[in-house]
Figure 1 (tube, rainbow, N blue to C red):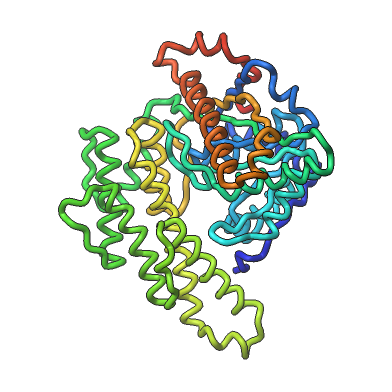
Figure 2: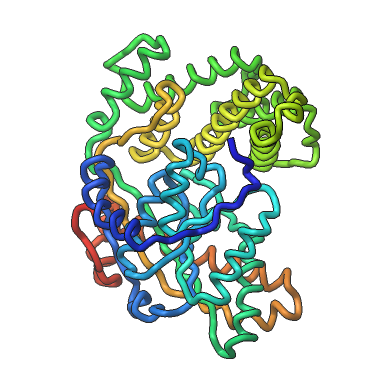
Length: 431
């Protein structure tokens, strides 16, 4: 276990990037059964932004968004950098992190002031004229309808970088390019998840009732998992608490259990997300200290405690899945939302996530936003400028998300109208 404070810088390798882009169509078609459809707003924004310093901001609704990033980078035809949560770099014994670094990704340690990540972002924006891809919502929202609050610290950094860029090269601006991504399940829901659902029901010891509809069975499985959590973590649910509230309470109490055991003070952490970040950093960094110090120094954390800490990290991964589920359950049910709930159930019962039917991601490239005009108000009142720019970026991200949903959903009967407004730049299996 490596300390989450250990920064992972980007180390782009053209050969690795070329190989991954070449392999992408085969991988998404055969393994993920995912199709990409790209659309571009009027004015050809990608052509206009060639050679400029650009932040591509994407809504983060689904776990497959990283594949969209690779496809988008290939479509843009330019080198790019991407911010990725630090803990991801340790997955699969660090192999995934190695690949991410070679693709131009670098780490950000959520929940703390990650100064090396901040510095790297600043250098990319102010001095490289490169493309940076960011999920400014910071979390998988599981939301097909709305763009969530944007990370204010990132907007602040964006304006600081613009200030430096304006000093070094007068008249040059950073551009923000909103991209909306929405998913549609193209195969039937029953065909997509019924076999896996039967497997999950067997593992949860649920009496299978094939006569019940898929959605009812999925929610029954969620309730069973929550009951198992209640027994395992000694959680007591009130009779009047909804399923959504039970999920949130489970996440909170699992975190508080870890905090109580480790005697970490967490009263100042208001949200479950911040609590999870804090505990993950403390537990992971504690284990890293044991691994890298001498045997004499490591005696302060006995082997049985180290095992407990490793179990805590697994619990915190569960908390993250619960928080994603909580966001999903707060929004209207749909076939793609049921697939996302199935991701949670599969991870909890089998330890992995697999494809759920054939899906299509509609990716709409919106109109770029120039950051330079916000600089004057930033110099006079930083908070006002940050709020104004954040509001405008979120508004335009919402517009692109709405448009991508209308393009991707033929049931609305408006596809032809939207096709006349947006140029179809790619429509083939894979990429």
